[in-house]
Image 1 (cartoon, rainbow over the protein chains, first blue to last red):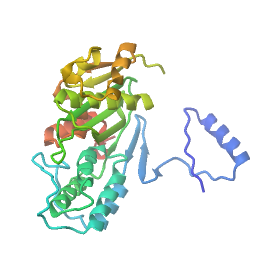
Image 2 (cartoon, rainbow over the protein chains, first blue to last red):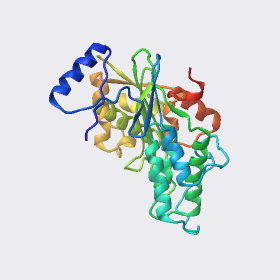
Image 3 (cartoon, rainbow over the protein chains, first blue to last red):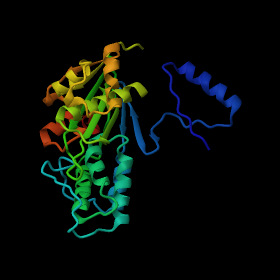
Image 4 (spheres, rainbow over the protein chains, first blue to last red):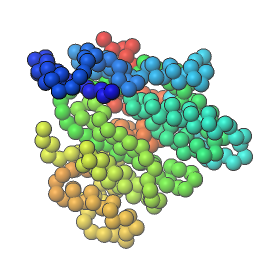
Length: 220
Length: 87
Protein backbone atom coordinates (compact mmCIF):
# COMPACT_ATOMS: atom_id res chain seq x y z
CA UNK A 1 0.00 0.00 0.00
CA UNK A 2 1.26 3.45 -0.83
CA UNK A 3 0.19 6.79 0.48
CA UNK A 4 0.35 9.96 -1.52
CA UNK A 5 -0.01 13.51 -0.31
CA UNK A 6 -0.78 16.27 -2.69
CA UNK A 7 -1.95 19.82 -2.55
CA UNK A 8 -2.75 22.64 -4.90
CA UNK A 9 -3.80 26.23 -4.70
CA UNK A 10 -6.79 25.52 -6.90
CA UNK A 11 -9.55 22.92 -6.30
CA UNK A 12 -9.97 22.14 -9.98
CA UNK A 13 -6.26 21.25 -10.26
CA UNK A 14 -6.73 18.79 -7.41
CA UNK A 15 -9.68 17.14 -9.10
CA UNK A 16 -7.80 16.89 -12.36
CA UNK A 17 -4.87 15.23 -10.61
CA UNK A 18 -7.14 12.72 -8.84
CA UNK A 19 -8.84 11.82 -12.10
CA UNK A 20 -5.49 11.29 -13.82
CA UNK A 21 -4.19 9.15 -10.96
CA UNK A 22 -7.35 7.06 -10.79
CA UNK A 23 -6.93 6.21 -14.45
CA UNK A 24 -3.50 4.74 -13.69
CA UNK A 25 -3.78 3.28 -10.21
CA UNK A 26 -6.38 1.72 -7.98
CA UNK A 27 -6.72 4.27 -5.21
CA UNK A 28 -9.06 5.65 -2.63
CA UNK A 29 -9.33 9.20 -1.38
CA UNK A 30 -8.85 9.86 2.31
CA UNK A 31 -9.97 13.47 2.22
CA UNK A 32 -8.26 16.40 3.87
CA UNK A 33 -5.00 15.61 5.63
CA UNK A 34 -5.31 15.47 9.40
CA UNK A 35 -2.93 12.75 10.58
CA UNK A 36 0.19 11.55 8.83
CA UNK A 37 3.02 9.41 10.24
CA UNK A 38 2.29 10.56 13.79
CA UNK A 39 2.04 14.21 12.80
CA UNK A 40 -1.28 15.88 13.46
CA UNK A 41 -2.03 18.48 10.83
CA UNK A 42 -4.50 21.25 11.41
CA UNK A 43 -5.18 23.68 8.64
CA UNK A 44 -6.37 27.19 9.20
CA UNK A 45 -6.69 30.37 7.18
CA UNK A 46 -3.31 31.71 8.31
CA UNK A 47 -1.26 28.54 8.02
CA UNK A 48 -0.82 24.93 8.99
CA UNK A 49 -0.33 23.71 12.54
CA UNK A 50 1.78 20.58 13.00
CA UNK A 51 1.82 18.85 16.36
CA UNK A 52 2.47 15.45 17.88
CA UNK A 53 0.12 15.54 20.86
CA UNK A 54 -1.07 11.95 20.40
CA UNK A 55 2.46 10.64 20.04
CA UNK A 56 3.47 12.56 23.21
CA UNK A 57 0.64 11.05 25.23
CA UNK A 58 1.51 7.57 24.05
CA UNK A 59 5.07 8.03 25.31
CA UNK A 60 3.85 9.26 28.73
CA UNK A 61 1.71 6.18 29.02
CA UNK A 62 4.51 3.87 27.98
CA UNK A 63 6.88 5.28 30.60
CA UNK A 64 4.20 5.93 33.24
CA UNK A 65 4.97 9.63 33.41
CA UNK A 66 1.46 11.05 33.30
CA UNK A 67 1.33 12.48 36.78
CA UNK A 68 4.75 14.01 37.12
CA UNK A 69 5.49 17.60 38.02
CA UNK A 70 5.87 19.82 34.98
CA UNK A 71 9.14 21.54 34.13
CA UNK A 72 9.41 24.72 32.10
CA UNK A 73 12.57 23.85 30.15
CA UNK A 74 13.87 20.50 28.86
CA UNK A 75 17.22 20.89 30.57
CA UNK A 76 18.55 22.66 33.62
CA UNK A 77 21.15 25.36 32.93
CA UNK A 78 23.41 23.90 35.61
CA UNK A 79 23.18 20.42 34.15
CA UNK A 80 26.55 18.75 33.89
CA UNK A 81 26.73 15.44 32.09
CA UNK A 82 29.68 13.13 32.00
CA UNK A 83 30.17 9.36 31.85
CA UNK A 84 29.34 9.13 35.57
CA UNK A 85 31.18 5.84 36.00
CA UNK A 86 30.50 5.75 39.73
CA UNK A 87 26.73 6.08 39.30
CA UNK A 88 24.20 3.27 39.43
CA UNK A 89 23.57 1.62 36.10
CA UNK A 90 20.02 1.71 34.77
CA UNK A 91 18.33 -0.70 32.41
CA UNK A 92 19.86 -0.06 29.02
CA UNK A 93 16.83 -1.30 27.09
CA UNK A 94 14.56 1.08 28.92
CA UNK A 95 16.89 4.04 28.41
CA UNK A 96 17.30 3.29 24.73
CA UNK A 97 13.53 2.91 24.43
CA UNK A 98 12.99 6.29 26.00
CA UNK A 99 15.54 8.01 23.74
CA UNK A 100 14.12 6.26 20.68
CA UNK A 101 10.56 7.31 21.50
CA UNK A 102 11.60 10.90 22.12
CA UNK A 103 13.49 11.02 18.83
CA UNK A 104 10.17 10.54 17.07
CA UNK A 105 9.02 13.80 18.60
CA UNK A 106 11.87 15.85 17.15
CA UNK A 107 9.98 15.92 13.85
CA UNK A 108 7.96 18.83 15.21
CA UNK A 109 9.50 19.48 18.63
CA UNK A 110 12.87 20.96 17.87
CA UNK A 111 12.94 22.58 21.32
CA UNK A 112 13.92 19.23 22.89
CA UNK A 113 16.51 18.48 20.23
CA UNK A 114 19.56 19.70 22.13
CA UNK A 115 18.75 18.06 25.47
CA UNK A 116 17.78 14.82 23.76
CA UNK A 117 20.92 14.59 21.63
CA UNK A 118 23.01 15.12 24.75
CA UNK A 119 21.24 12.27 26.56
CA UNK A 120 21.45 10.03 23.50
CA UNK A 121 25.23 10.13 23.69
CA UNK A 122 25.19 8.06 26.88
CA UNK A 123 23.21 5.14 25.50
CA UNK A 124 25.96 2.50 25.66
CA UNK A 125 26.34 2.80 29.43
CA UNK A 126 23.39 4.71 30.90
CA UNK A 127 23.54 5.76 34.55
CA UNK A 128 20.97 7.11 36.95
CA UNK A 129 22.01 10.73 36.23
CA UNK A 130 21.49 10.29 32.48
CA UNK A 131 18.11 8.72 33.03
CA UNK A 132 17.16 11.63 35.25
CA UNK A 133 18.08 14.10 32.49
CA UNK A 134 16.00 12.14 29.98
CA UNK A 135 13.08 12.12 32.40
CA UNK A 136 13.36 15.88 32.73
CA UNK A 137 12.65 16.14 28.97
CA UNK A 138 9.52 14.07 29.54
CA UNK A 139 8.53 16.34 32.41
CA UNK A 140 8.94 19.34 30.15
CA UNK A 141 6.77 17.63 27.54
CA UNK A 142 3.96 16.90 29.99
CA UNK A 143 3.36 20.63 30.32
CA UNK A 144 3.66 21.34 26.63
CA UNK A 145 1.88 18.53 24.78
CA UNK A 146 -0.17 20.94 22.68
CA UNK A 147 2.88 22.82 21.41
CA UNK A 148 3.78 22.38 17.77
CA UNK A 149 5.14 24.00 14.66
CA UNK A 150 3.12 26.71 13.07
CA UNK A 151 4.50 27.77 9.71
CA UNK A 152 2.32 30.70 8.71
CA UNK A 153 2.16 32.90 5.65
CA UNK A 154 4.75 35.62 5.73
CA UNK A 155 7.00 37.41 3.25
CA UNK A 156 9.63 35.05 1.91
CA UNK A 157 13.13 35.87 3.10
CA UNK A 158 15.67 33.16 3.74
CA UNK A 159 17.81 33.59 6.83
CA UNK A 160 20.37 31.26 8.30
CA UNK A 161 21.46 31.31 11.92
CA UNK A 162 24.51 29.55 13.23
CA UNK A 163 25.89 29.20 16.69
CA UNK A 164 28.30 27.03 18.60
CA UNK A 165 29.24 26.39 22.19
CA UNK A 166 32.98 26.35 22.42
CA UNK A 167 34.25 23.10 23.99
CA UNK A 168 30.77 22.27 25.22
CA UNK A 169 31.37 18.55 25.46
CA UNK A 170 33.24 17.96 28.69
CA UNK A 171 34.46 14.53 27.62
CA UNK A 172 36.49 15.33 24.52
CA UNK A 173 36.36 19.16 24.46
CA UNK A 174 34.67 19.21 21.10
CA UNK A 175 32.22 21.98 20.30
CA UNK A 176 28.63 21.62 19.31
CA UNK A 177 27.22 23.56 16.41
CA UNK A 178 23.60 24.42 15.99
CA UNK A 179 22.12 25.92 12.88
CA UNK A 180 18.69 26.75 11.60
CA UNK A 181 17.11 28.28 8.54
CA UNK A 182 14.08 30.48 8.60
CA UNK A 183 12.01 31.14 5.51
CA UNK A 184 10.00 34.19 6.42
CA UNK A 185 9.04 33.44 10.00
CA UNK A 186 8.82 29.66 9.64
CA UNK A 187 11.64 27.33 10.47
CA UNK A 188 12.43 25.00 7.57
CA UNK A 189 15.61 23.21 8.55
CA UNK A 190 17.62 22.78 11.71
CA UNK A 191 20.37 20.68 13.13
CA UNK A 192 22.35 20.27 16.29
CA UNK A 193 25.56 18.32 15.95
CA UNK A 194 28.86 17.83 17.68
CA UNK A 195 31.69 19.04 15.48
CA UNK A 196 34.04 16.41 14.15
CA UNK A 197 37.25 18.19 15.09
CA UNK A 198 38.45 20.00 18.16
CA UNK A 199 38.22 23.78 17.77
CA UNK A 200 40.98 25.80 19.36
CA UNK A 201 39.05 29.02 19.82
CA UNK A 202 35.50 30.29 19.98
CA UNK A 203 35.92 31.97 16.58
CA UNK A 204 37.09 28.65 15.17
CA UNK A 205 34.03 26.83 16.54
CA UNK A 206 31.67 29.50 15.20
CA UNK A 207 33.42 29.46 11.84
CA UNK A 208 32.96 25.70 11.50
CA UNK A 209 29.30 26.09 12.49
CA UNK A 210 28.83 28.71 9.78
CA UNK A 211 30.40 26.42 7.19
CA UNK A 212 28.14 23.51 8.23
CA UNK A 213 25.13 25.76 7.92
CA UNK A 214 26.12 27.00 4.52
CA UNK A 215 26.68 23.46 3.24
CA UNK A 216 23.16 22.65 4.44
CA UNK A 217 21.61 25.65 2.75
CA UNK A 218 23.35 24.61 -0.47
CA UNK A 219 21.99 21.07 -0.22
CA UNK A 220 18.50 22.27 0.48
CA UNK B 1 11.93 32.04 -6.50
CA UNK B 2 15.35 33.57 -6.70
CA UNK B 3 17.39 34.39 -3.67
CA UNK B 4 20.49 36.38 -4.43
CA UNK B 5 22.44 36.45 -1.23
CA UNK B 6 21.55 34.28 1.69
CA UNK B 7 22.30 36.14 4.91
CA UNK B 8 23.98 33.88 7.44
CA UNK B 9 23.74 35.29 10.93
CA UNK B 10 26.59 34.63 13.28
CA UNK B 11 27.31 36.12 16.71
CA UNK B 12 31.09 36.06 16.52
CA UNK B 13 32.88 38.87 14.69
CA UNK B 14 36.16 36.98 14.44
CA UNK B 15 34.44 34.13 12.62
CA UNK B 16 32.78 36.64 10.27
CA UNK B 17 36.13 38.25 9.52
CA UNK B 18 37.65 34.84 8.81
CA UNK B 19 35.08 34.31 6.04
CA UNK B 20 36.01 37.63 4.42
CA UNK B 21 39.75 37.44 4.78
CA UNK B 22 41.42 35.49 1.98
CA UNK B 23 44.81 35.42 3.65
CA UNK B 24 45.92 32.50 5.79
CA UNK B 25 47.00 33.46 9.24
CA UNK B 26 49.15 31.37 11.53
CA UNK B 27 46.27 31.14 14.01
CA UNK B 28 43.82 29.85 11.41
CA UNK B 29 46.24 27.35 9.94
CA UNK B 30 44.89 24.40 11.87
CA UNK B 31 41.34 24.84 10.50
CA UNK B 32 40.88 22.09 7.97
CA UNK B 33 40.85 23.17 4.37
CA UNK B 34 37.35 21.95 3.59
CA UNK B 35 36.01 24.33 6.19
CA UNK B 36 37.32 27.24 4.17
CA UNK B 37 34.96 26.62 1.27
CA UNK B 38 32.63 29.24 2.72
CA UNK B 39 35.27 31.84 1.74
CA UNK B 40 34.74 30.97 -1.92
CA UNK B 41 31.02 31.40 -1.59
CA UNK B 42 31.37 34.71 0.22
CA UNK B 43 33.69 36.02 -2.50
CA UNK B 44 31.30 34.71 -5.22
CA UNK B 45 28.46 36.57 -3.56
CA UNK B 46 26.32 33.49 -2.79
CA UNK B 47 26.02 34.34 0.85
CA UNK B 48 26.79 37.10 3.23
CA UNK B 49 27.81 36.50 6.81
CA UNK B 50 26.27 39.12 9.04
CA UNK B 51 26.55 39.91 12.69
CA UNK B 52 23.71 39.33 15.10
CA UNK B 53 23.87 40.07 18.81
CA UNK B 54 23.82 37.07 21.12
CA UNK B 55 20.44 38.05 22.55
CA UNK B 56 18.75 37.57 19.19
CA UNK B 57 20.73 34.50 18.09
CA UNK B 58 18.01 31.91 17.47
CA UNK B 59 20.40 28.99 16.98
CA UNK B 60 21.26 29.20 20.70
CA UNK B 61 18.46 26.72 21.44
CA UNK B 62 20.41 24.01 19.59
CA UNK B 63 23.71 24.48 21.38
CA UNK B 64 23.20 25.09 25.08
CA UNK B 65 20.71 24.64 27.87
CA UNK B 66 18.87 27.93 28.26
CA UNK B 67 17.11 29.69 31.08
CA UNK B 68 13.34 29.92 31.01
CA UNK B 69 12.96 33.44 29.56
CA UNK B 70 15.39 33.04 26.72
CA UNK B 71 14.11 29.55 25.95
CA UNK B 72 10.55 30.83 25.55
CA UNK B 73 11.69 33.82 23.51
CA UNK B 74 13.56 31.65 20.99
CA UNK B 75 10.82 29.04 20.92
CA UNK B 76 8.27 31.67 19.94
CA UNK B 77 10.59 33.27 17.39
CA UNK B 78 11.06 29.90 15.69
CA UNK B 79 7.31 29.51 15.30
CA UNK B 80 6.82 26.79 17.89
CA UNK B 81 3.55 27.80 19.47
CA UNK B 82 0.90 26.36 21.73
CA UNK B 83 -2.27 25.43 19.89
CA UNK B 84 -4.23 26.59 22.95
CA UNK B 85 -3.47 30.19 22.08
CA UNK B 86 -4.20 29.89 18.37
CA UNK B 87 -7.51 31.01 17.00
